[in-house]
Image 1 (cartoon, helix red, strand yellow):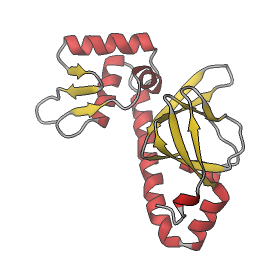
Image 2 (cartoon, rainbow, N blue to C red):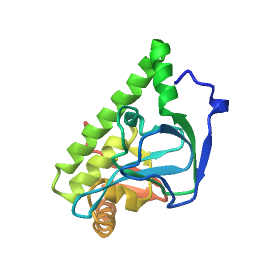
Image 3 (cartoon, rainbow, N blue to C red):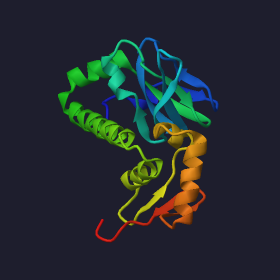
Length: 194
């Protein structure tokens, strides 16, 4: 995506629960997740922690930070992970020098905007059951199948639910036949015509 020699970029390995950066740190790079998964957590003025989302291997991470001075969230590895480091100054120079590389980057940013809007839509739903079902529907393929890439507690955090409320909702949906789970694989039973 970016016109940089990836063999010359630094890598960093992270242990489970290790921070890549902290809220308030100066932005000096963006990252590509080569292995593992990272979660974005934001701490509010009153001490609460909000999960902004998780990214998995094969995805760029915090691209919007290119245009910020500081990180507005913590980034923590949810499992052993490795990232490729794209220095901010180098990326901005490459985008300015080679405008054709900007289109794929803009597509990536547009995808992030779509995901942010979906998260807002989810948070407006009051019912835990309906919120969970919409989350699965947004992430499922056309047959209603999805592989859960995040740990259940991370999904609960993304949905603004306690872990306990999320687990109770999953159990209720399974008993009602709305979903079928087997390990990390989930099948959503959709209504006819959807």
